Image (cartoon, rainbow, N blue to C red):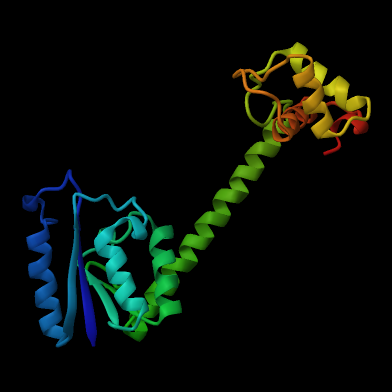
Length: 223
């Protein structure tokens, strides 16, 4: 197999931590020798955080370019966090690997999409991540429903004066379109809280806020 090795160290990480670039090189060389793979390229990003997307990391971007153009078959790293900090980002990378038909190997885990068992582990990681996302969504909905039932106001905090918000509602209630409401407010010399002129989207935000406050005039709040 033709492999691309990738190494990364952030500005905060030191070589003595076991995560230095040279330490990673030694570990990768040993793994490559055991597997009898051919190294097409050894790429690295020094002083770069894993929170940056791949295309903003020169070394990783080049590695993925080689892999997606079929100049290499597998991407190998010492630890999965050299590639990504979050499970979501790792899953996105695994999705890209599946589309471009290259393997991903992280030596610190069982993630090795070049083997059947490694692909199973990657699938399990994805399933668990999906379950966690659904649980979070479910808990959030339950919490919001409870707050709403208790009379709490949901949505962004109100930043405009009550008088100005009331004027937006009054103009809308006369049958003006949202764009016409914005024009009328500007004609009256009124500005948003930050001094900016009124726009269609700004009026829409105020109308949604009025809906959250419980207004019942359909003509006023219809978007």
